[in-house]
Amino acid sequence: MGVHNVMEDVVREALNQNRASLHLTCDCHRCIDDIMAIALNQLPPQYIANEMHSPYVRASHQADRQGATNILSTVAKAAHIVSESPRCQTTKKE
Image: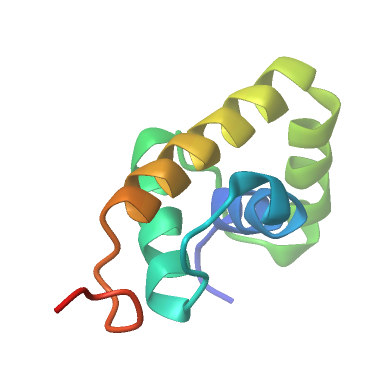
């Protein structure tokens, strides 16, 4: 397996579960990846070396209400940044 940042899974899940309420101007792969990158650069990584520990780390983030709120807030800010200035070809203005 190698090393894996479980925070990527947590952020992706938060983004997918709240996609409608984030009012994204574009949800292409590039924009989603940009949102993920911006959010992940603001959050502390949670690395694991054994896939068996992933459910425990994810559950700890779901149980920590303040932490879950912080993650969602960070994702919402990243979504706003990307929506204001998308880099994809889909929304480029001529």
